[in-house]
Image (cartoon, rainbow, N blue to C red; front, side, top):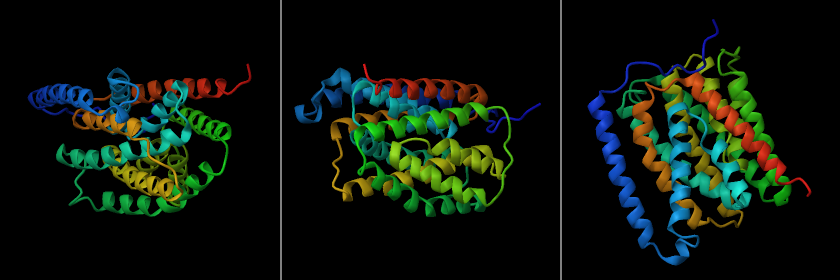
Amino acid sequence: MAMPILDLAVPPLAASALVRRVLLLAVAAMLLAALLSLAPRWLMPWGVPAALALALGAFFAEYVDSSLGMGYGTTLTPVLLIVGFSPLEIVPAVLLSELVTGLTAGLMHHRDGNVDWRRDRAARQSLAWLVSLTVLGALGAVWLAVSISKVWSTRIIAGIVISMALVILATRNRRLPYRPRALIGIGTLAAFNKGLSGGGYGPLVTAGQVVSGIDAKTAVAVTSVAEAFTCLVGLVGYLVAGKTLLLALALPLSLGALLSVPLATASVRRVSEPRMRAIVGVATLLLGLVALLRLAPA
């Protein structure tokens, strides 16, 4: 029988610990709604309901990402394209939100026992190797994104999203043959995708680590932290290139995504990975196709 790439079906945290996190999450969500209602008009140009909808979308996308090491930018970017944001508004905001949540997820995965940064030498080496590949891929993607039209940028993003969806679906129930040298290409391509579209990093990097012998839970944690550094490089690249960060979009995305991290890392041992990968893959494929259809002439 084919083996799934990630197997997260191991004994969960104590029920009481999970309940405490859910309760804390509910309190934090109420505080978030209160803070957004007090925000100045320039920071909330679309109103509190729209900001809460953005935060909610980021929450669910980041829950999947922190649980499986994939799915945040790949899923959220086409949604934001569909509702009318431009690529150069979306990508910096997504990069900032994943920078914050990636570092937080790395700490929470360590706290929940999914990775041991102090003792696991392989995890540290994998992280260092992936981070070292971010500059080439992410900065190259920023240069391309600011040099081409919105139409072509959207087409490229949709193409990357569809490609990543097909990868997720094609590999959800089997282990791919792996060559160690391929990690160089995987890391560079993933960083390029992240810098260009805000997504596409996790599926390549998580799967690449697991098939190279890294424990699945460790791979998810390493991907979260490596992705944060990739996002940092990409975000700095956009700012240096003279692009601005749309705080009205970045703030609700960052807050919503951050709220999901403690619940996601606590759920890592409970998630049925093949089923979740199938859901993410189908949804992402459909969203990518819709994004392409929006560009079709009437």
